Amino acid sequence: MIGVCSGRPVSITGLGCYVPKRVLTNDELAQRVDTSDEWIQTRTGIKERRIAAPEEATSDLSIPAAKAALADAALTGAEIDLVIVATITADMPFPSTAAILANQLGAESAAAYDLLAGCTGFVYALTQGYGAIAAGLARRVLVVGADTLSRVVDWSDRSTCVLFGDGAGAVVLEEVEAGGFHAFELGADGAGEMELFMPAGGSRRPSSAETVAAGEHYVKMNGREVYKFATRVLSSSAQAVLEASGRSIADIDLYVPHQANLRIIEHAAKKLGIEKERVFVNVDRYGNTSSASIPLALCEARQEGRLKDGTLVLMTGMGAGLTWGSSVITWSGGRDNEH
Image 1 (cartoon, one colour):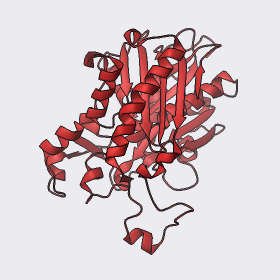
Image 2: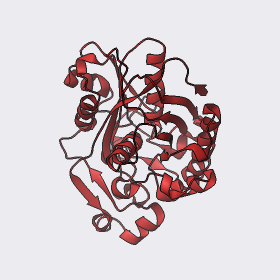
Image 3: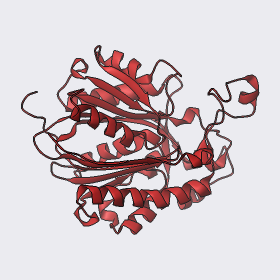
Image 4: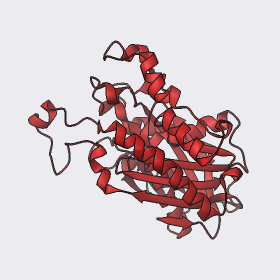
């Protein structure tokens, strides 16, 4: 699915993020499983990740990120029309984490729902938020990417436990005078469902003493196949959205890919022909935070002065489903004058 944005420009007018205080280093992991700092860094580029406190759920990570994004946009929760939370680790099966979050923010009249598209969730949610505004269904949308992956990782499985971390990022979408989103490209290949999945906890295999004992509520991943998929689709999706937007990779000021693995990012950048100076990377500090990955990167890029009004940004994600998605946006923080 690919679409070119038309009509009044819609952009990100508020940005916020949050990560838990607890830092888990590779050396600490080496005390739990047969691994080492050198082994992890060589294969993933990850040095450390953040781990939620026992009392922190996904909504708890989302609240400070969302409040920061609202403050950045000079808005209150009551002014938000729609809340979308992209996550694979909702507080509970229902109600949605988005509804819980909306209540905490005072967004009493907002529609709210969760979106599950694996690590591509944030890009999917951006697309839906843009669509709601472009269609006249909403004026202001809060999009949150948040995951507490430490709760669904088997800490005795070296192939997965070294990869993931917890965090949240949030953005506010509104109409602006200029700039904003140019195009989106989304896709999914359900044939790869068993390459990255959680076996139990749904209607096919409801939770039971047997599924818990068998460790079927943890992330299962075929690392080799996911790597092959990621290195292929990150570049192909990026190329498709660039073509749709009438841009080339040479026009891009900042490339913000999903922070899954440094080797995947480097492979995609090389295939796209974009030098590392234009690629944002923070996977070394946070690991793979799933739906929080791209908004966390956007936050840090702005803090470092790499994200300013007029910056042309390419975002690309991929994840369970198997899903993928990309967007091109001219960064423009100013809202229209009707606010």
